[in-house]
Length: 326
Ligand SMILES: *Cc1c(COP(=O)(O)O)cnc(C)c1O
Image (cartoon, rainbow, N blue to C red; front, side, top):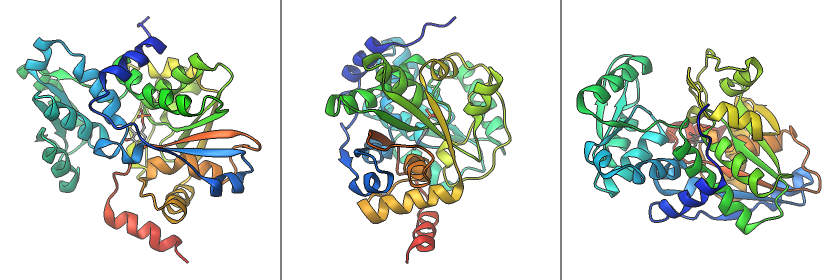
């Protein structure tokens, strides 16, 4: 069995990543509390985090704790989204070479966004799988150190620092709602929060278009599911065929799972914009979506929601606003 990360690792991560991250605001949503009957609802704005998403926490904890030899070799990943941005940003800021592998079907806009942060972008193949194969080749050929997006103790501990910040500000939090895909974020937050307060209720929110973790929990092992296009594209992707950490940690620490639809995600995004002037991507809106659609009973509770990021295609975003504006 692999060594699982613990609370001490999260405290160490908080020290390691201090210079690389923002301690993001935690704001109150009176509007959401009123709708749900909650005593109070707090929104953790990782959408304002450096690079536009929380992934910089895990990536910097991983990269900054590499040995000097490993740092000299450089790092590599094959994410299309926020993890790619984070690896590119952290590496460039610490003088480490980074390579991000993308397939040809990733938008030019995304490739450019990652490149502009400092990484060498390798565009290869017609699918994510082909890009992934190229990634393994480059690890071999160039001796680059892989930085995976979620199933790694350093990544999980880095994401767990979000819970430290939330509980430091509001130790009396009763419920946490957290977006879920590969589970680095949820497992880090759940392990941290439960280690501090075992009676806190931790909820994962998945999307109906790609509920890979929920299916894997049911099966008791990683399940590959056929995913469909979604507004919450940062929540696409499976949990890995050889999941060593996040599945087990989520099984151990997470109390409840919810699933939201595309329409509900749109409403969550629109709510953030219209009530709080916040631009958030689909993946970041799933917690608000779950509350607005009454999928969880928050009566009298103090709840914390993590708004995870703000990387979104402008045209798609404006469409959502137009569709829901009155
Ligand atoms: C990566 C990501 C998530 C999900 O995190 P996992 O660790 O893969 O579960 C949620 N929201 C945003 C914006 C992300 O980039």
